[in-house]
Length: 506
Image (cartoon, rainbow, N blue to C red):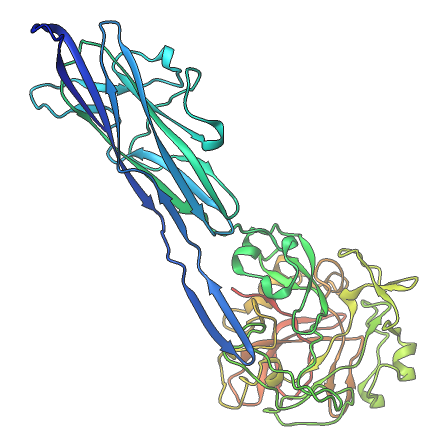
């Protein structure tokens, strides 16, 4: 801002001593943080084309604003207005800021022979309350009209952005930016300057907790971090529209608190083949399963195979009743076997899931608790989306069949992994409680396993794959538990069919 003063001839050839005219010129700098050009990207994954439109902001205003002042001994107020326009397509809106470009909000004379300055106003003042030789600004929406006698001015902040307006959605807005000053005849004539920067920045995306999500694929580390421990939500897997209970647990991670029930490949003669893509799954590139999920349990002992089994919609009426189980010795291949139904296994395919995400009730009337659904069983190379082959030894598989934004837990003897850290928060490593592990908020399920062509320990033991291979080509780490025992980092043959629980990606 520049203030120019000059003596005034009264047209009769004499100079009025001590009387001066002043012109303040404001140099405005507009800054965009960022000013992003609209960019379009297109990528193809399978048959899906994604169009990515980047956020952009724009600001327009004149380079300078001049304020003409003809001082009087008692002081004269004058002001000048500029039109400011801001627009953005950013979903979170923008923040508009204003400050001097240096750490000084006085106006300084360009005449090096004087050290006189025009000071910033103090507080909020109308033009009638301006002190002599002070200046300030006012910003108002264009709809509020131009500045008037009741308009309040404030000091321009020193260097460093000060938010004046913040929006929360895409918009195009117009403002009146007014600068005013009151000058008397006590200061020398000349030009007084300062430079003000007006900046606009696209706001970062609003990060909400997981209760604002609708799909599993919307989960991000930022969302999980924002979510409070104990928060429960039910999200839909966009791949097959099945719903899952998820909870932020005491270890600070967001977990599925329900077994994964994703069918892979062509199921029982259907013609469509499931392809998992990076857009919907925890895979680094598109993956087509070599084997299809089946309802027929059969024997397979190949540690590199990708079999998975879907037993249907079953829950156990007493998930912590470990003595009531079926499998192995009788060689059963489905839950509708008399041994399983007598052990409390119930088909809930005709029932409605409960809305309560914290109850320990399993069945009430014609409703059931989806936390206790048995889910599917997967061989390790199926659970790891084909990345758990014989060449993966002593390290983590890179991919999994978890939804995008989720992953298999890491579990090994070196750092104990996520299973260990989770159970430790609930005292289950040092003082195991077989009821705590099956109830709210953990809901781990003793759903058994598939082995040698039949169900095993269905109701008496729980088995969950990790992403980590043992130091041999035959085994991988898992969590398992019984009525009197829990091990968060034990290894089994990879051809076993175990349950899968995912946690939000780290």
